[in-house]
Length: 244
Ligand code: NAP
Image (cartoon, rainbow, N blue to C red; front, side, top):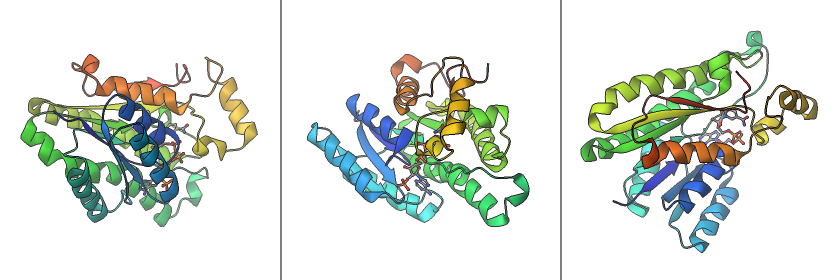
């Protein structure tokens, strides 16, 4: 059966590395992006240049209509989605008292409702086939808690609940649901915190370095593979030992 992966938020950072890795493992890949069209289209061109099938498709994952349209276009262009990676996410540092309604709602709309929208859009085909794989990108901050990133940490904890509950509900249908909880990974998200915070995060990571997007892509590829065929409802922490 043709393997088709939809990776949300794949124009940059972790999502980009996941799309690259899955493509090299033989998946036709939908590279979802929100604002960075040129980056997403460059990646799709690069993958097609390597002889792979790839398409860059814009959608704000917070919008159910936009996600439905993206999944429809993916099916039309590449085929039905067999692997969904819910990677799109937003974060910003700030005091809890300064998180207004709009910011709180946007965090949940992108990080949690976005995953809900994408899962509900790809599920009909997976249920019909009685197979499929869903991987949510949570965070160590959703497991441990995070000062000055309370709203973000709440959304990432919600993805843990979503992963475990959905794994139970979908297991009888042959669909596995897992999550990766990355530690501190060298992307725009961490670079935006400044070099002092970056150095502090490195010093707090037992393995003594930030993770790379490729580290997370390898974890995702493993969970998606047959090697993980007996794993569901798991949260794979990839953090260099940060929360040990
Ligand atoms: P990033 O460099 O900031 O990239 C974020 C990606 O998400 C971009 O491709 C962006 O698309 C996309 N995106 C943002 N809002 C979107 C929306 N409404 N609809 C669709 N796509 C949207 O982030 P990252 O560091 O790679 O993080 C990726 C995931 O890993 C996130 O879920 C994050 O919470 C999680 N994570 C990251 C770290 C870390 O240390 N970096 C640690 C733990 C967990 P455009 O660029 O096209 O707008």
